[in-house]
Image (cartoon, rainbow, N blue to C red; front, side, top):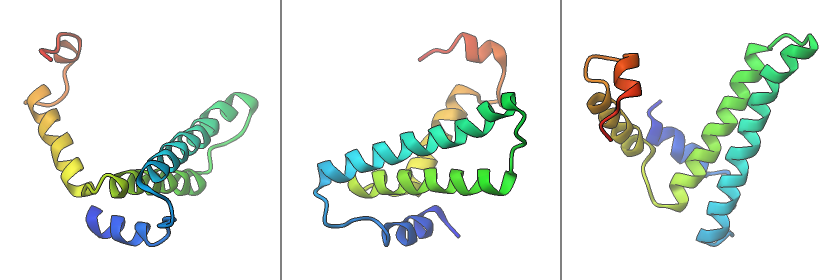
Length: 107
């Protein structure tokens, strides 16, 4: 499945009754809350919990859903955003990650 295919399927479950501003806010709330849920898996390790990888993957999927909604509200393609990110990373780390380039970024 491509990112744009994922976005198409994910958008079927967006509340299309929201205006653009409401959808953007909902997407931001969704992304923040899902990131918090992902974070809680790791926080709970300090309380003796084991990370359930399957459940963690489901939460990462929920985060992706929020990203898809945010992109939809902005009329952006997830594939375009992913490609832009890779191009930025190629410029930042042309030979792959190095601490030196991370610490002394040109941008």
